Length: 101
Image 1 (spheres, one colour):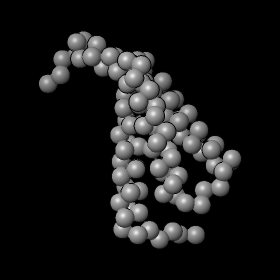
Image 2: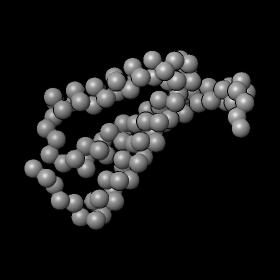
Image 3: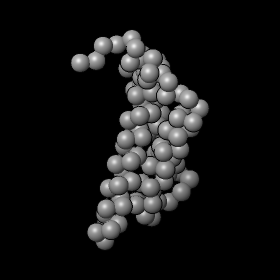
Image 4: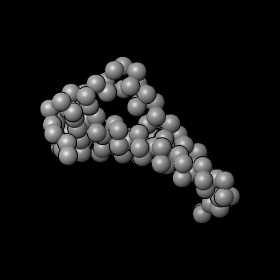
């Protein structure tokens, strides 16, 4: 069944998806910088997608907006934990080893 969203719900949904996408990009960038392997990064992406899919076996998604917000919140927590534990320092070391144009 298709859900009809108000303009505010659509805006909230797009905002949640944008924030979640940015956090996912940061997480996968972190995995790549640490592993220096596209294969490991692809595997991390596959595991992340399968985890999100497996979640649907435990709950019934009746509101896609709430589901999107939940996934985005999960990625925000992961990125916050990486930041708070100082894991972003790997990006500084990358800057010192590569020449960016």
